[in-house]
Every structure is written in C-alpha cells, then in structure tokens.
Image 1 (tube, helix red, strand yellow):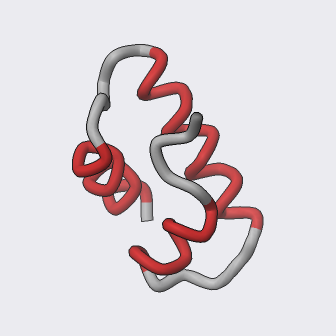
Image 2: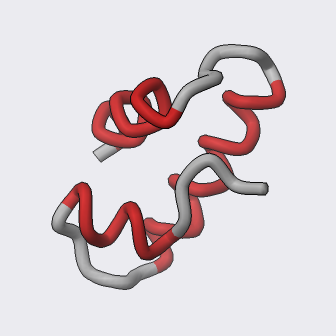
Length: 51
C-alpha cells in the first residue's frame, strides 16, 4: 500500500491536482523500494524536497 496518496500530497503540500502529483508518487514509491524512506514522516519530508 502507498505510504502517501495523491490526496495526501494535495493536502500536505498545498499543490493542485496535476501531473506533478503522479511524478511525486512515483518518486516516493522508488525511494521506498530503495530503502531511502520507511515512515510517513520520511515520505512527507521527501515529497517536500521534490516541490
């Protein structure tokens, strides 16, 4: 299951629904698979670093 959803990103990062959401979600999935993030807090920080 995803660590964050698109709706989470829209709410947390205050960004509108857009293709950017999909790109961030894909980057989060990859970072999680690579062991770079493991918690929701890690994921939020990582997502913020991408915007």
